[in-house]
Length: 67
Image 1 (tube, rainbow, N blue to C red):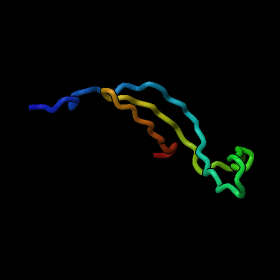
Image 2 (image 1 turned 180 degrees about the vertical axis):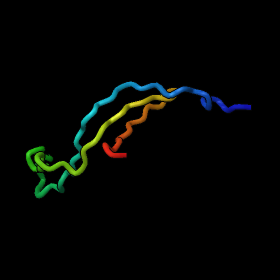
Image 3 (image 1 turned 60 degrees about the vertical axis):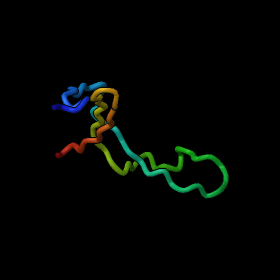
Image 4 (image 1 turned 60 degrees about the horizontal axis):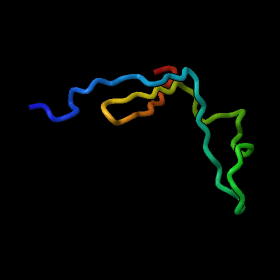
């Protein structure tokens, strides 16, 4: 017998063809994190983002451009 949710289909909620991922550097002082310190001209990763849902669970998938 199939368990509940086993046959739920996966629906695509959103696709962004190009997204950038940055490493947030550690804070040098007690001030807030600033995006100006993130090296926006050199992202750590670039690729596609796909948001999907299966049942009541949502997934954020980061997909590489070449694979």
